[in-house]
Structures are given as C-alpha cells and as structure tokens.
Length: 272
Ligand SMILES: [Zn+2]
Ligand SMILES: [Zn+2]
Image 1: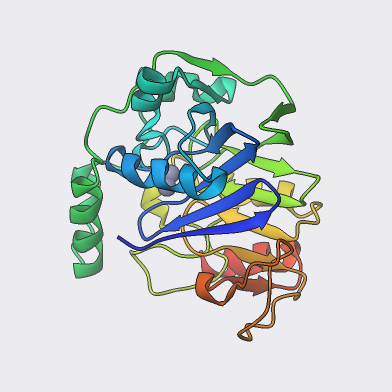
Image 2: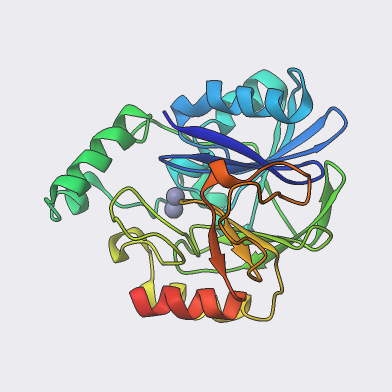
C-alpha cells in the first residue's frame, strides 16, 4: 500500500494513502489524529505516529470528520488499546455509534459496474470496509478546542453525511477537508479539487452548498480525505527541490496547486 507521511507544519503531518488519508497532530508525546483510516490501517496509523513523534506513542484523541468506515475504521481499536477519546459533530454521533448509517451500500456500488468501481470496492472490502466500525464512547464537539498543542476550529459542512465536519487550524492555516472537498479518488483518473461521486453523498445539493462556507478561508494547505494535498497560493511550483515550511522536500508528495480556495471550490463544482 502506498503511504506517504508529509510534515506540513510543526507538529502537523499529512498521511496520504491510496485509499484514505488522515492527519497526525503532535505536541511532544501528545498525539491526536484527524480521522483514522480503514480498520486494516492500524499498522499504518502506528507507523505514521512513529514517523511524527520519533517513537511509539498512544493516540490521545481522534477528531472525526464523518462516520464512514474509511475515516473511523481504527477508532474502536484505538479506544481499546490507548483509551483514545473520539469526538465528532453532534449530528454525527449516531453515525459513529452506528445507530444510523449514511454510507454507500454494496447494492448501490454494483449499479455502477465499471472496472474502476469494482476494483476500488474490492480494495475497500479488503481494507475492512464492511466491518463493524461502531464506536460507542464518542463525544460531541461544541466548538473550537486545543488538541496536541493545535487550536482546531470545527466547520459544519453537511451533505456528504448529515454531520460532516472540516477542521480549520488557523495557526498553520491548514484546512482538513475530509470528504467535503477532495483532490482524487481511486474511482476516477481526475486529479485536483473535486467532489466525490454522487453515490457517496447523503445529500448532493447540501454537499455543493457547503462548499460556500470554505471560500472565506485563506489556507496555505488543504489536506483532503482522499487524494494528494492541495497547496494554496501558488507557492508550490512543482519543481524538484521545492520545500515545505518545515524544510522537508515536497516533490515526493505530488501535491496539487490552487490560486486560492475559491478557485479550488469553483473547479470542484465544475467537475461535479
Ligand atoms: Zn466519506
Ligand atoms: Zn472517505
């Protein structure tokens, strides 16, 4: 499996995998995640924490963008092994507990019998996509918070699911967009800002409307739930040797570039 961990800012690491992404926030040994992959991503989760901290460390908090199996897949194991606190929007609590489920079914997927769809579905199932991922010990977020030394502001972006959140980290000017705005998915060959295929959204109209809430933000980086990271402001010229603010070379992470977030949103809308 292709896994790339990129330090975007101090104590802030983006983990890209071909199936789903997550973010590692650190402050010394204190570790928080935003999303936590499919159930079978646990070894990759542990490896990404080691890469970020320099050694094994327990995950104290998982902030959830939304209750899909590719975003909360390892949460129950983390709760059991690390005593992790799992948090999400009030409207997503029932989804994380699996009292409600707004996720595309196998029946819906096989209505789109293209080879790319079936290949992706097989990989998602192998990654544990059909397992029970319920987390009962989940608590609702009621506003901005500080986790692992980072101020984090939840943004309501319903549509993909009823309680989907993005997370704005104002100090690093990073937007963790979850599945409200992505830059790629194994289903399509399209790269760059986009919305997921309509079958993945609980309410497509709301998913499109929610994009408006992003356009006032002025991020330097957008870290999506699927696809490579988006560099905003044209700082990244794609040349070998270009470096992240942390000093790390970026050419291996294959980021996309947008002039500003409004332009990225416009592009995503145009492709939907
Ligand atoms: Zn999703
Ligand atoms: Zn997803």
